[in-house]
Length: 362
Image 1 (cartoon, rainbow, N blue to C red):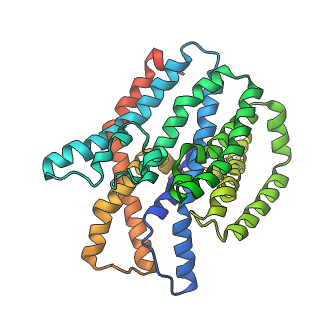
Image 2 (cartoon, rainbow, N blue to C red):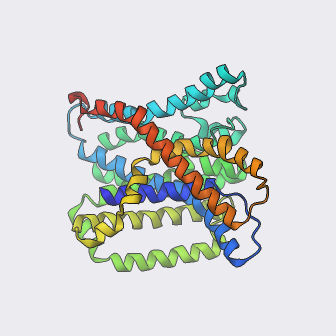
Image 3 (cartoon, one colour):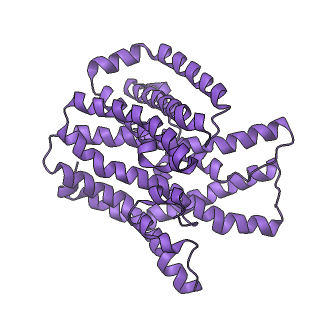
């Protein structure tokens, strides 16, 4: 769906704004607003989780009764995710050390990256400095591994019951992890972020029930108004959804996930009805960002630390101002996009073509 490509593009854009944040010391209202906007980009990961839950569950529901259900799903996921992910790890842990004679800091913990478990070990001090952002890829991969079995085996109501249970368990898990281990655990542990994936999954189920989809379409304005009110109240209580505070990590993450689900459902309903609104919600630039969002996510932190930060030091931008931060964010976003396009053309698309084989067709 073009509108979902656009949403994915929006998600990667705000994530990049967060990562390229230069920790401004605001001296004016515009600078304070800019600093807050850049820092709030972490919410883009929550949108990614909602999108993944929606898209993956939709794929699984639509193919639930087909032959080779597991083989098709896992084969296509491997072709989409593994080539770039493992190419980057090989570059970081094999090729670069051979050329430079230096291993990246924390290389002794690389096993957790190779096995997609870094989101469980990073908060315990067992992370690799070069790949701090790979935690969210671990969350998604663990979801991909478990969710197909639940969708296949459960009746529709049973699947919805599991979604509701996960939505209720996640904030409790975050509160426990926050107090027992620390905010990083509540931010990265899969059980702590599963509510966003489960909300997306529940939306995929709901939109496949004709009666529910029609009811949602009729009550859109009421749902938007209630969601806006809850979002505003949450912003007041959490003081702007500060990322690692207890109140944000318990209630705030769930409020944001719900908001993104409502946004997603609105986009999907607009796409289904066609017309001008659907086209306006999916402008070409956002769709392009969505197409290359996976590569952009993989590369953005690496480029920031290995290219951006050294260049800033050479320019003497130790304490950058608002305009310098904007220039840096724009330049790094363009660089990240170009790297992702190159990666897609040189590596990813050749593996994606293998999906055309009969045994991998959905």
